[in-house]
Length: 299
Image (tube, rainbow, N blue to C red; front, side, top):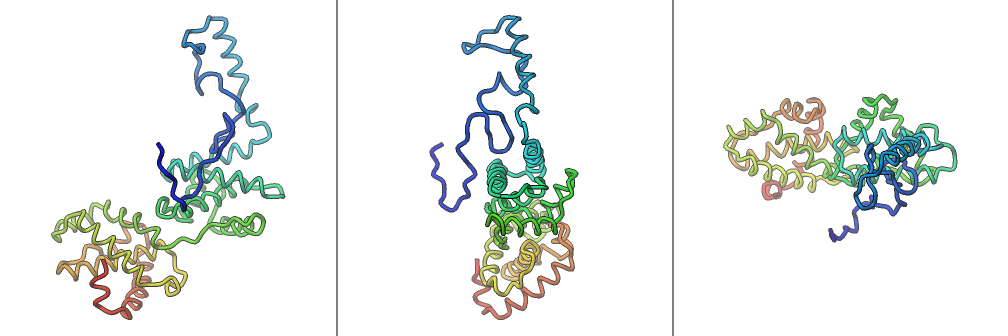
């Protein structure tokens, strides 16, 4: 309560009328009791008579979802899918509400009829998670995959194509991800892998000490490699390879054996070993041009 909003934080809140919440399609005005209420009381908390109970139960039943949503059935289904997808991806309410806000904004600004509301919703979710950066480090492939799990024909290629179409119509487009946005997630995946935890202990690391050392080294490596030299590589895979590189560097600096192997990094993050190997080769060449003292002191 009373916390000031940061200037660079996306605006997930909008002023809306009563009963018109962002993430669902509602009717206007007040509700009769709670959502699934079947027993009613008056404004003073007193139980209504049997006749009044029957009357308001009938009125609540008449005020059905079909009547509330009217001609907005496609929008209703898209927002319902968003709620389901948000739970599967374990997204915060702020990301969900920002997605719903962007979806309604895009729909209202698109002059032509929208033929695929689900695909538009998927693109809006991509916009939202990229606005929140490391607060919602979800990849494009994961968004497409979870929509497919929910029974919708959404794939990466269709999302990219729809994002380009929306940009030409409304000017809205997803922001580009940076590897820095994925550092907390990749580090969390490593720190929650039981094999990695066991190897940390056998190497003499305290888990919090290792995590702090890795975070500092990963950010330092990314700071040494400018975006112009990353070659447009997948930012999530690049971050996993940076984690593998960082583990090798801190092991050498502390005189210990490294914790991560390419196989273990692959198992912890679900990234193919050959991708880690390929990206590591690029990172290694780029770091060879950096003075050794700068790498050793970069934490």
